[in-house]
Length: 210
Ligand code: HEC
Image (tube, rainbow, N blue to C red; front, side, top):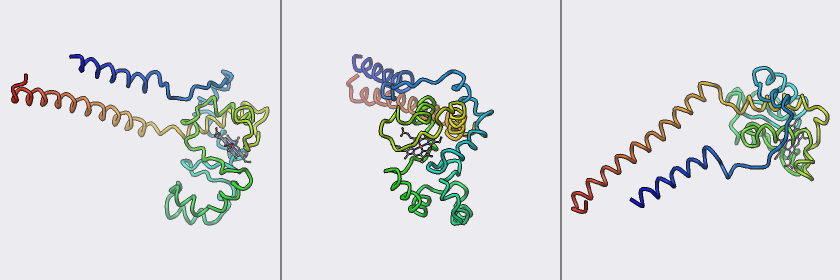
């Protein structure tokens, strides 16, 4: 009985922590004016313009591989097209990093590290962080080699965030598939747990311990 209560509490606590109140998630909070948050959320209206802004302001250093957007020097390299004919528009990461190693190293030499690919930046860093960091990199990461390229252009920055959101979000069919898989996995675990519990009871009975 005590064991049952103990494991139930642990399980409930576990799901509470990962789903409802994730104490391990980053906790710094960044401020973003409401009207810009609205732009960043409105993928339908602004992602397209955001992509153009990304190409103009960020692509010199950053790729968005999930969207087949590569750093400018790679984009200008005729090798890219040959590779895309072979592998599809979105190149496997290892192929990309091996073939264009020199381009990436040139950036590393200039900035001390390779500017990260931003495909999953929205998921990893969140909307507010992307907005605040892009507007004022030095304020968020003192000493960072990322230049402030969007100074005094908060609205355009929000549109770039909308673009990054559009890349990070899977298309609706994919989203449904993932939800189904998640629910399926948990249902499977519950059913197996119940079956194991019944089985355990039977064994105990057969051993005369119950
Ligand atoms: C001239 C090169 C350059 C340009 C242009 C540039 N970045 Fe960066 N960016 C960097 C470098 C270098 C880093 C790595 C900084 C570090 O880790 O200190 C970086 C890091 C980042 C990060 C990760 C921050 C973190 O917390 O690790 C984000 C997000 C980012 N840039 C967004 C953007 C966006 C959006 C634009 C366009 C508006 C942009 N960058 C334009 C060079 C650039």
